[in-house]
Length: 226
Image (cartoon, rainbow, N blue to C red; front, top):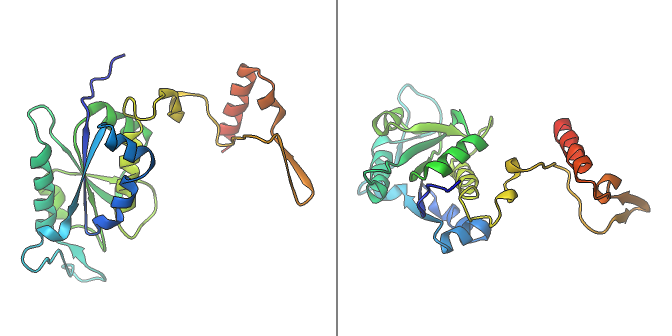
């Protein structure tokens, strides 16, 4: 099946702290994907859209602790990213990273990779983003798990990584994508036996048997136990 994706897939990361994101883009698979033109990544500093005083947050209406990211800078930053990527065929998908959003998973990553639409990932901070930003931008709220982080930068990188590795040619071999093969969380390599505190730890015999059907069944059993 021939992919309809037209590289590069453009990802925009909007954050109060873009310096947290930059190092990840310079290493490993993501760096190689950028270098080979599989993806393009743009970092947007939210403070640049906060006006003369770079004011991007304020106290929440109704009281409560912490600060809330103002709607206007978020909207301006997102629309700026959209303008850089929008074409007649490829309308960017705008995503707000939020603990209360729809949970991200492999199916979504696969879908977004196949679509090839530009992704605008907005990293929240503090108590969140003024809800009017989501309404104006018609953005989707996405969470990477049932937990709360200091900000949306790590979830943004998680999505970037998960989508990138599903693009044709990024991993070099499609079988490297775990969902496309029989895999187990328990993996082993040489040597066959290691000794720690006078106790031997061996590779399971089934993995040394060369019997691929039995090995696959073992992996499936191990996966089901997790």
